[in-house]
Length: 247
Image 1 (cartoon, rainbow, N blue to C red):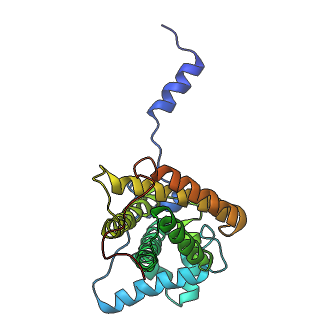
Image 2: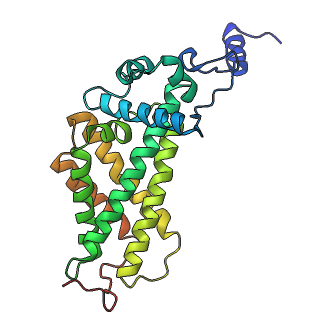
């Protein structure tokens, strides 16, 4: 049976192996692990932290996809080889930045919960809206965090790190709501809240890339989307637990 040129090209394409980009390879191995080397010694830990802090400082004016390890080395007055040792690829550095900023975002979420718990007879919808306002203001005042969490995601590991931290924030949120409101037993509630937060972050990422900030219109749409989605599992009215009403 004869094969056409198109068939031969197709067969070749099917058998081809996609290798990592040369800019991401540090050896002749085809395996690329974007994993930072977390040091044990205090001096190395300080250098590790300084590298991340310097990268954040650069992001106050630069776009995340534009900075390199050499830019960070020059700004931090650290040999480039030291950065390459601790962060074998720029993806490894970005993943650590993502974890750091996402963890801070989770802490912001917790603080917003506590503030809302002091409010007078809130509905869960108002609770979510006010928390969104607080988070939006924190993002808009912190360009490095916007670049890391809302800017272009070049590596799947960084995106997965964001999702993991979002799940952690969702757990905190559900815990706070359960401590304040009488909530029925809802299967996979934390996962639903995690998806709702992902919806918001998607709209905010779009706004940031288009306008350099989370504008009012995008914020309002994100809150409508989140609350509408949460209404698929939560009743419109939740009773406040006895003794939890604000002054």
